[in-house]
Image (cartoon, rainbow, N blue to C red; front, side, top):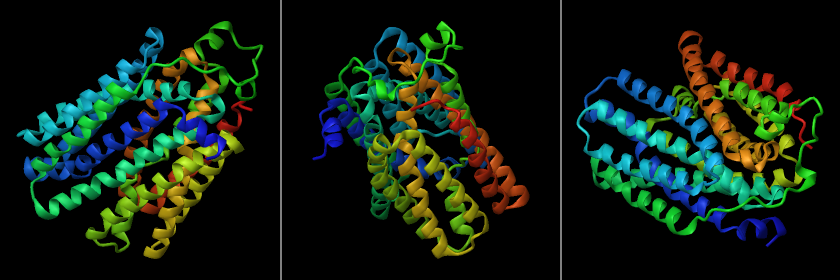
Length: 397
């Protein structure tokens, strides 16, 4: 086992949080690809209710991201937020199986997103503080790889279940089993930790123009440029569901769409961990620039392609984009903010990206409906290219 792998394997928190992400995503992905069908088919509600549910839920997610990160820094504890977040979500999700009105789904979906917002910034902060700074790319890559592995297995289990039992309600209740495992792992495996000694090679040069407040709060100019770059990129980073819609428009059958979805998550699961390790060796900013370049090329190609073979190839390249960026983007942020502001930094990281993604999806859908898929995908490529100059201004070395 190589030295970077040893460092990650020697951190119980990193391994535990990877396992937590794996089982949590099995639970969530057993439900959410089927939730619109449940709301419109079983509960007999229109598509507008689906939009209202997702809009309110994402707004709650973005706000809770910012608040939980800052509060966890103040009290200097991460585990209570992680436990609360996963517990709330994994109680709310299975209860969707016994609902009879769409507003009950709205409440439970909002609770689930609240749980995600409460847990995610403290969780990422705990990962960053559980390994040395030079190993954070691999640590985040491992967590994202396990998350994507669960996202692959969840729909597969749902598919196999529905082959034999045609009850969405029963499937939703069954999702409580991996959810319970998630909470138990958090209770018995995860421990509070103090940040390791900072490697001076992975720090930022102090800018004499920055105020004491900026340095102490962890929001210097580099953090601001990075969050701005991430927000602009996310404005063009539409939901992967649009890729499936593109696949359907160029001739893939409905039955094959779940297979494409699982293949995408399989490639993400396989590439995220090695991508994080390479980011630690090659440089997090370089990896992000490479990943954003791949994203831009894939979206430009999606704007013009009408070939099913080409789309399959582009999906593999899209998985490479995730592998290049998922570990690197979090590891880069952890190098930009001090340990005492780690929760706050990740709170704004997830909050800004959440708002930008919500806005970007609305914009993408409007452009698709108004001018077609080509213009929509081209907009995503342009936004990713415009974000590069902002990322280049981040003074990370």
